[in-house]
Image 1: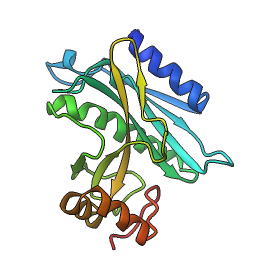
Image 2: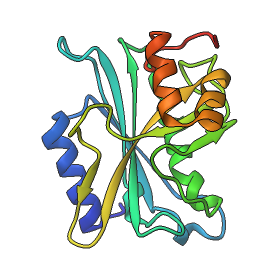
Image 3: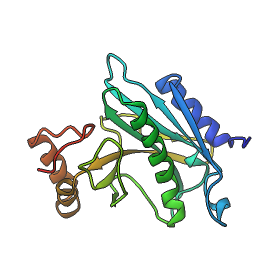
Image 4: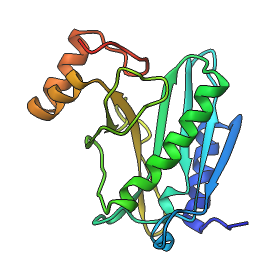
Length: 196
């Protein structure tokens, strides 16, 4: 069994402090290809079911932060939330989707950060009308958006599926216009939606 680095252990414990014990944790290891040493040795996808005060199913990667993001001085972990109780099939597909997404920046030597958009990421479980992903910082002021370890800053990137229309507003008009568009159209980013 692969032992986690001290950084990954710290990230894991911070998640347990924040969310409590997950209902499910699936390990994906054996990175593909001949450059496996350039990828995190494993990624656990942890799942927390909805609670009465938070009606979200929440997923988090643990292990991606073992490596620095290409061309950056920080590492990241991914969070993904979907409103409501999800089926076992959707949960399974989402864990696979996030595990694959966690390798994407390393496989493509791509720096990812808050507000970056990833077009055409494939089929996004539970979001059939979304065509892109946006990496969002904390959704609330002073929210949880990073973990400081002894040596590296670990950013939490909230993975948000967006429709083609939403992507165009963000990319062509900027963040302020995007946030205004969401507000004016009463868009809930945590449910599947039609492209307006």
